[in-house]
Image (tube, rainbow, N blue to C red; front, side):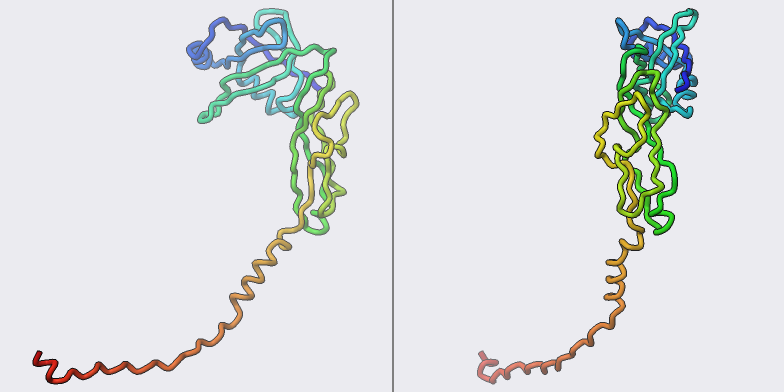
Length: 228
């Protein structure tokens, strides 16, 4: 994996006030942990965006350089927080790593190839899993894992156990977990609708009309009752 560099600046202030001051100055607060003690830092958010939008994504080995110093550390980007409205980066978590000790990371799964079930029988490719958990040395972190779906026919399932895993990488995700499958074409799922339409188009049974009974005449009231 290619190594990217990130310049970090130590910061002393804490709290929301200090965080707002940093953001007004075009910096994002963060923390670097994994060493002897956690270190509060600040970074340029543009540098972070260049890293996470690169080919390797956010899970990659970083060389951290302290501003104004020759010191450097190896780390990975563990977490990021974004403003829900502006989508600005508001906090980063970096984990210092030792090159001789395994770490657990999340790796993206990218599908490659055209599934035979899609190409020949108009099935629908469904990507069930888009990332897996692995353990490896920092220098062995893969950029991504490729899931070849070329041989998938309708009803076939590609599992984690079918993925090509590089040497030195141990998969932590359940090997029986589905990664991709090919579902039947949508046309096969609309048969009930056609049946309903056929019933609606069938001629209605003729309405049976019954003879209406004549109204009964009111009983005559005798003269004696009237006089009363």
